[in-house]
Image (cartoon, rainbow, N blue to C red):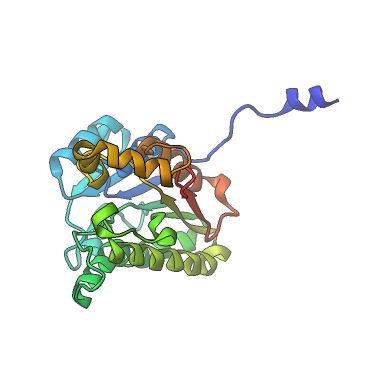
Length: 271
C-alpha cells in the first residue's frame, strides 16, 4: 500500500508562475540578480530596477531580454518620488504586477549607534520607506484581482542585532530598520491575507557578495573571518545569493497561499 501511494505521488510541484509579471528592486547584482534569474526560469516576466545601467543590462540580457517579456529601468530609488516613477513606468492598468520582490537595502555607511537622527531616518527610508511607497501603489491592483505576492528581503540582523563595530561592522541603524521591516511585514501580511495578497519576508544571514563588507574583510583578514564563521554560523561558511533565491521563488508561487506574514530566516544556523 505504501509503495502504491509513493508511486502515485507527483514528482514535480506546480508553482503557477508562468507569465506572472514581477518587479525585483536592486536586481542588478547579488541576491536581486539571482532572484530575477530564478523567477525568469519559472516563466515569469521580470522587471528589474537598480542604479547601474550597465549591470542591469547584463542581467536583463541573461534573462532573455525583451523577447521574453523582461524589462529594466535604471533609477535611484532613494531619490524622493523615484519609487512612484518606477511603478508608473513599468506597470499599467492593463498589465499590473503580480509579484513584487523588495531587495533594496543596506547600511549606507551609517554604523554609529549615536549617529544623528537624520542618519537613522536615511537608513530607514532606504530599507523600509521605498518598499512602503511601492506597496502603496502596487498592492491595490493585486487586491482587486485577489492574487498577489509581495516578498521583502530583510536580514538576520533584525533579530540578532549587530556586533561591535571594530569586530563585525556594527551597522546598528541597519539592524533597527530591518526589525521595523519585519514588523511591517507581519502587520501588512495580516491585513492583506483576506485578499489573497500574501506578504512575506526572508532574512538572509551572512552572504558573500562581491565588493560588499564581508567580501572585503575576507580578502583583507581571512583568519578573522573564519573565526567569526566558526563561532557564529553552524554550517561554517558564507551563504550565496543562489541559496536565497529558491526560497523567494516559492514565496512568490501559488503554493505559498498560507504563508501570510511569514518571515523565514535563511542563515546557515546563526548562533
